[in-house]
Image (cartoon, rainbow, N blue to C red; front, side, top):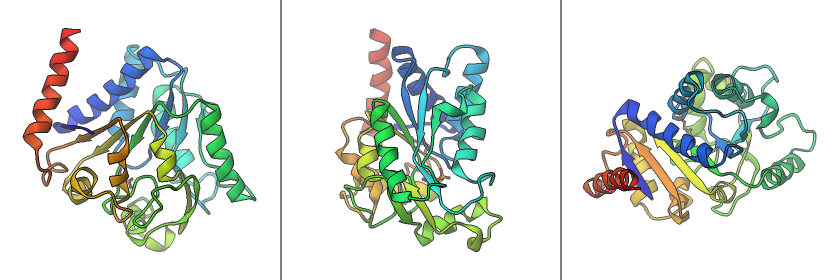
Length: 261
Ligand code: PGA
């Protein structure tokens, strides 16, 4: 794992740099997109770069991680609507290039299998952007999720529903109870995973992600098994990590290496 511990604005800039580097090599890259607050800074920074003309995302295809079940098609918190509003509209990607799990399918299990096939047909995810829940979830894979899981229907954990009530007028009963989510094994298929976490409320989950045993109790810990993960943290989210000196030296030498070539 590469751990970058940065000041607030630098987190979004570094995340956007990683996307920009990929697009320079592969303008038709396949991106995996997360919803939630964590990636918003990266999306806005990419939007600024698109507006300045320094980066072009018009050739990409994107797949989101998950979708609530039971929200009306035009609900502002339905993740398809969130990602069109917070990402696609900002960076100039057309809606037809944004794929989201089909929450309206009559056969939801078939829709989950179809989503896996669609990702494979697009060539797989080149770069997956992730947040992390306070309980260590990634996408909607909460504690107890199978480490080998694929896209499927899930009941949302109580903690996730409490955390997300802020998007539903702080009313827990308005938060959906079920979702479709990519599984942990689906996420691990991405070639590069970039996880962002900011703030003290994420610090406990972050230490389990980086230093904890690999365990379904903290699903993000499965990322320790992936060969290319970049974890971007602010100082608060990183505060319980051991070895922060090492991470900071390694990250600084990355910049020196890049300058040499
Ligand atoms: P957040 O959520 O980015 O809104 O903190 C992260 C997550 O639940 O995965």
